[in-house]
Image (cartoon, rainbow, N blue to C red):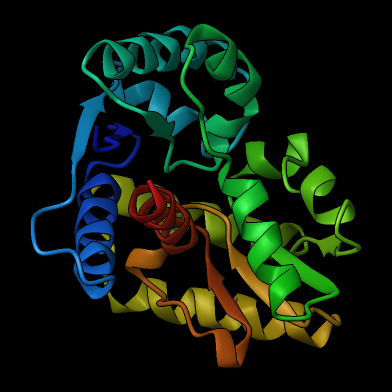
Length: 231
C-alpha cells in the first residue's frame, strides 16, 4: 500500500500551501508520474492565538489540543506519517507524537541533519520568540556538534515583525530587506549558516545553501518526499 503524507496546516495558511507546492515539485522531480499522496488538516485555532505565539509563550499551551486533534484526524484519514510545517508548534512535538500511532517527523531534527551534511558547525536561528525561548533547535543541533546562536534583541524584534506581517498578508519587499540585514548581522557574529526557523520566513527569503541560508520548510518537504518515495 502506498504511503500517504499528512500535513498539519493552518499555522500560516500561505505557508501550508507553499509546503504542498514544494512537496509536489519534489515528488515529480523524483520521477513520480502521479500527484503526491498528501492530505492537509488545518488546525482550528483562533487567529489571535497564531499572532500571539510569534512573540511570547504566554498562550503557547493553548495550541496543544488543536495540534493533537489535527494529528488524530490525519491518522484517521489514512496518513502513514505526519509533518508539522511550523517551527514554533514543535514546542508540543512530543505531545503530538504521543497522541497518534503513526510517526511524526521533526522539522528541527531534519534541519539539523541537513546542516550537518553541509559541514555547518555554527548556525544562527531566525524564528519566533517562542522558538528562541524554548531553544527547540538546541538539542538536535548539539547532538550533531552544531552550535546555535540567535540575533540580538533588536534584530529578534525585526524578525518577529516580518513574521507577523506575513501572517497578516502584509509582507512585501521591505520584509526581505529587513531579513537580509539581520542575516548579514548574524554572519558578522560568526554564524556559518542561517536557518529560516519559521516557515513563514521563506516567503520573504529563499533558501540558498551556497550562501549559507537553510529553509526549514523546504528541508521538511525534502525529508517527507524521501520517506514517501522509499516507501
